[in-house]
Image (cartoon, rainbow, N blue to C red; front, side, top):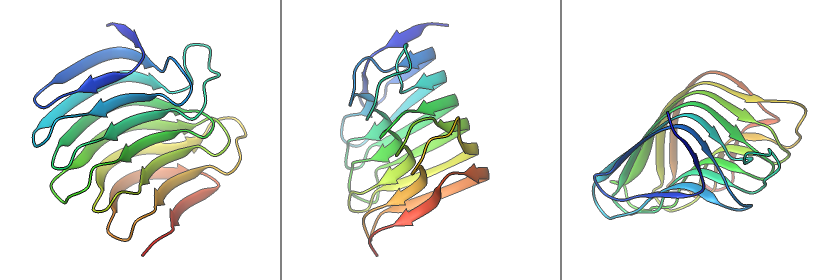
Length: 170
């Protein structure tokens, strides 16, 4: 399987299957769903938002940037670094959303957030075996909802973070 370093944009009707995927720079969004009204599929064994050296910060893993687009994601293990976001939906509208299946999602740095929605009518739906802190990070959050009409539908067998959920609006 291939190793990819850096951001990837998925347009409507595209698929990507990767062994390991690493961020390349601070504040990078690793996978963005672009396009308008169709789906894209992303699969990776390892997603590491800390980069190859493990020092990058403020990176995002998966982001749906479209209104009406759908991103399907299957990930073995995801590492979220300091001030990072694992999954976020930036599209508004009830049709667009993210479906995900992740075995293990690790928050490895201070202020890391596993799942975050803030746009109107954002919708994230998924399964994760574990959302856990790795090491001793502080102020970690599993689920953050910052808009009254945003939705997170999550099935998880275990969540161990400083804050399990933060609902800031609505």
